Amino acid sequence: MHQSDAPRKAVSATSPFAFAALLVANVALAFGPLFVRLADVGPVAAGFWRIALAVPLLVGAAFAGGWRPSGVARGVWVAVAIGGLCFAADLASWHIGILKTSLANATLFGNSATLFFPVYGFVIARAWPSRMQGFALLLALVGAALLMGRSFQIAPEHLAGDLLCLLAGILYTFYFAAMAKARDTMAPVPALAVSTLASALPLLLFALFLREQVIPHHWTPLIALALISQVLGQGLMIYALGQLSPLVVGIGLLIQPVVAAAVGWIGYGEKLDGVDFVGAALVAAALVLVRSARDRPAELAPEGVAEA
Image 1: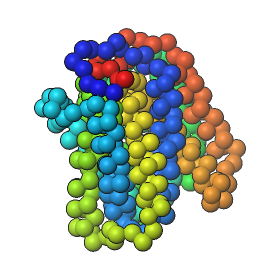
Image 2 (image 1 turned 180 degrees about the vertical axis):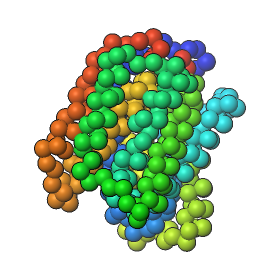
Image 3 (image 1 turned 120 degrees about the horizontal axis):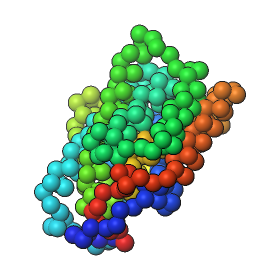
Image 4 (image 1 turned 90 degrees about the vertical axis):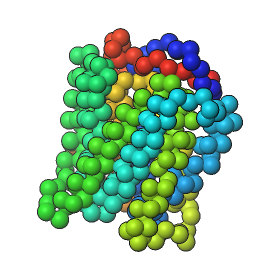
């Protein structure tokens, strides 16, 4: 894996390997809230350890792949740094919000990038969808509404948590946009390594400011959070961002509430009814449709560097 100034060929918006990476990334990321709940530190501190434990692995992998910071343009550094700061703010607001609202609300608002990132693609990146892909997005949103609608509640006691999770979804969109820009000219592992490094200090300072417990007694949930959510999940997500259109990435995010519902059913006895299964089936159908939809030139990934 190395950098190159030579432009690469535009990659199909439904590249098979990148699409598979998107699916695996969202499955891995869906377990993040579970590990946060199992951790014996504060919610922001859990975000810090997710980052801190992943940094040595990611930086080591970037250098082992031949990447060197000397060849990175200033604009790319700025994009990655902004991405890292947005990701730190996203984790902090999402983790706090989980504890202040229902799980269904947190999942819905926390994944609001499902809507925001495709809008970014339509307006800024000019990645306009085909009719089939637009229908797939609508189908996915209906499926998500059915899946979470039964337990979704608007209540005064949830307002603070709802707003924090909505803020997290907006910040996640900015993170995606910044990292998509960085991925124009930067390979996925170095991009993730630098953005992860940029997230660590803000999370630690905020956790200390909130006077959270930072030092854990049990490391297993935090190690799992770092390896599964950050290294595997976020690593594959950053790879997919450089290959797939914002619409496809946005629909892929809806895998997370489906997996979260399955985890709640298996691990916590939260029974699913027929409506839940219909919602999950609609999300799955949307993924099939967007995967098989005919590619449009506007949806092709931007030119940048090749990955080895």
